[in-house]
Image (tube, rainbow, N blue to C red; front, side, top):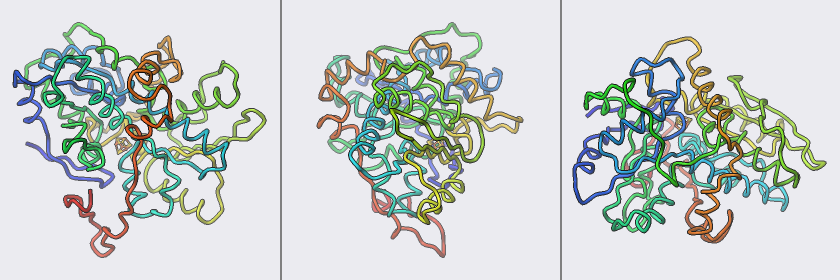
Length: 396
Ligand code: SF4
């Protein structure tokens, strides 16, 4: 088993590959897997594809050959994240709630805020990350849909970083004593598992993700690039706040690799000030400016990895020039090709709310299962030896 180190310092983690194989070969178990947006534009590089090429459909075939019973898409949960997060933002905006609101999809950023800026935690969206939302949806809906006993359902994630392994282990994401996401693999761990089977990814026929948790809009897909969460949230929030159908869905101000992207949008006669930062040094600078009253925003996206999840520590390592932009371009191209690009137009997410989460975003049931709370970790940080006590229950 190999260990991987998250470049943001979130955690050192071991591979869960052996445990995933064990579950796959256990005839009692039904093993489902979700795949994060960024994985599909990183995985191919280990198999000779062009940098940033979206290999999602061949990857689905490979995963079925490996023995996964159902292959789902974290982008479905990303759409659902937008339902909750943008609804939360609109509520804060219209009722005088805490602003700016920070996004909460990146566990390394959340841990950074919990450690160094606990006073800002009321500003962090309480909406779970897409990985954690998928875990809740899978546990709540799949046993009945798939006809499997809850204890025999094994939920696996493929993610672009080790911070997601840390997130999946958090006690707050356990239910009935068990993590809602059992095992997390990184992109390179999945690549090694595919290679160990002797599967040649480039020679496979493409296949589609399984329904209904495999359907997503373009908004869910672009989560993997810096600015993507903000853009998807704006597609939802601007349409809801203005009450008008959104014609121009590209918010290009959020795109690209500038360390900080800012824009002021006119929505229903009001000004909406947004910012996007990636890399924790840029996040720290922005938070310090906000605390000093030198920067004013309503909504801020933060991703710990420079470039966002496409350049996460669990993605294939490359020194190729422009690899971040190429992987991001793979996601934006996929968004463009989608018939449905606004998260609020995801019919299957609507249906999921109707069946299992109180009928609408922000309902009591949605708040119970799709939101979270944060911990002040400042006491766990030792300034003389700047290592988080990551393996203790206290740290979790
Ligand atoms: Fe993981 Fe994405 Fe955060 Fe990087 S930006 S730590 S890949 S969630």
